[in-house]
Image 1 (cartoon, rainbow over the protein chains, first blue to last red):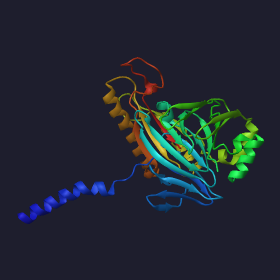
Image 2 (tube, chains in turn yellow, red):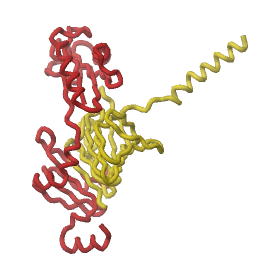
Image 3 (cartoon, rainbow over the protein chains, first blue to last red):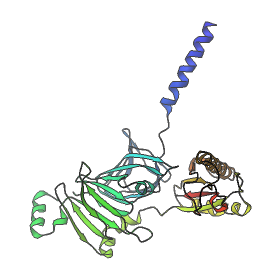
Length: 149
Length: 196
């Protein structure tokens, strides 16, 4: 009896802990294309971007001198990063039922073309782009940012 | 560019060459131009960029703007803009009232959906369910999610890769045909399939 109880308790503890350990990070978007020297930095690891690769919050898109990378997001936002860029997807929270959320991107270097999606429409400045010199509040549009050398 | 070169350029009057970061506002896919606000760290508005092809040079202390022509922007950033993924494509499917069963004419849209996925490398598909205004919001949220899931299952059954598809319920928040509450409207009982 005692053995059975111990096993039951063990399984209960495992059932609680396992989902925490294996929790799937939520999909925020996907890579649509990558050329040249490009990578996704995730928790200290470097992932080779290819079409269909799932993106998560906190991923960093990085390109070298001949690199380019493009992505779409689940709120319909679209990105194209140019060469020598470092773009962190710092924060992405989105409720597809209400179509509200928050999207913060940090362009640390290089260039990025952006078409905003549902998050930018939900509320002024719900989508922000951080640059070394300023923070941009995106109010629904297409634009380019280029970080100074 | 090194600091000395930057000073020389500033003296020559080409402020934008080294004034820090550059922002170029462009018309969107429909030809409309939105707004980008330049904010300080504490959220104060430093400037608004709101004209097509308006270009701002931003440093931590200043914002200067000028308007370029479309050709100049195209020649400088053409490759970057070409890299932008195309806008999502969407398809509408309709249901028999109060059910998750598609009306017959909606079933024939399937080949176009598969063709669209084929055209897009790294495609992602979102199935969004909608209801009309008959019933409570919470019930319609559940019904719309159920419709989206039924269509997701149907797409998987027809051979679509399950890892591509998400199912979302929007309830009665986004009416295709504007009606009052508690109004049966076949055009609002629909599922939208978005291919990104």
